[in-house]
Image 1 (cartoon, rainbow, N blue to C red):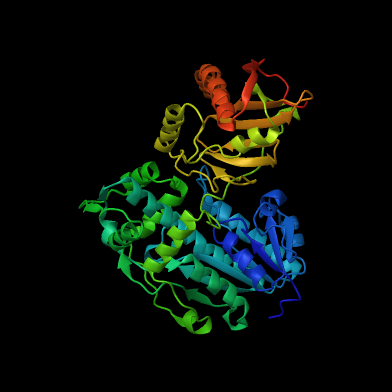
Image 2: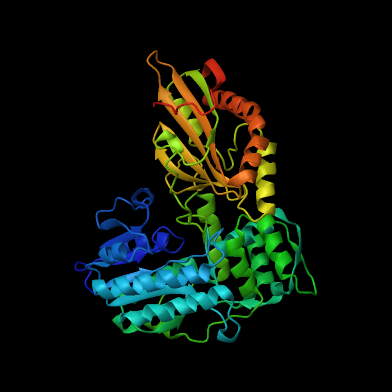
Length: 504
């Protein structure tokens, strides 16, 4: 294939697989076009300014925009998965996106689509895998040749399976597990998945074929947990397998104990109960590579976590869109509640910003840790992400990052951090931090929680938590000033509710 000719389009560029495939393609000399709903989210990635990268803005449901994104491309990687919190009818959405892609590919003259998905027993497919298989069939309707790579289980840092194992072993010395703990599985390392995907581009004979991709090991989930505990330096974990089907309890318990959302846990649990092994090894001859064992994959994943070098995560998927009323740009159709707190510091904006950008994760929220944990625990009880996701990096934050149960939707270096809540709540919530130098040489640090309620219960929710804001956020600003090593000149104080945003 010609690296210098037509670009390769990646749909799902900021997802778990796409976030690793795209830099690999760039390293290999391919011209790559990344499509997404947010230009800045893609640009914020470490590879976002690569000279061979072209960023295009396109929603997968907007066929016209998708057609323009595909224009001039011979090959498209389809790495889109619609399952996410709050999306119950994922199959319908999967179908709509697939048909939109087919129409766009036909109009743009795309010749080849590479589709990566999960693998299951055709006679016992889960709802999620049934939808994925249907997507593959739809993609083939447009005339382009479709290559499908199906994996039983992907193992790597930031992946749902790895994060689940990591949390279980890290938090529990004794595990009560369902019968799937003794089911055989055949994990494949995420690096090997990327090698197969990128390798297919070099082998046109893979076009129109479906391949099963798995690692060299066949082992039980119990053995996988044991290997993780050994490599993580943890004491031996005691696993007690319960002799009954506890499907729903498993999903609820895993959501409570791990940072993985219900939307990802449900299809994972559905697959765990079935033995899914690869029987087709043709791809190993076409794209030869060293397949990592489960132990080697876990060692590599742990090293990436320790070195803070996790290239992509299952938590990366999340909207960076924000309501027009945020920051006071447009008037909302309904009531928006807002509290604004500020403190004046004897120090530079850089000192205040260094504290703001480290908030959450292992750093915590500077004050009221117990209250934040209670809110996170309640969120996990009802199926939300809670606080256990943490954050991607300790001392840097970019648009699109997950930050506990928040999503970073705006970052202005040394000036502004805007977070959108992904916790389950009866309304839309944002939390904004602003840092600004004042004419007298001091610095103002502002924090503004805002909330647009949905109906009566949304208003009740705000009225319930609002009284705690004055205590929590005032002391929080005081502790942030202490962490910055800056003397407080004025405040912490509260601006009148509904007051203007900083700088307006």
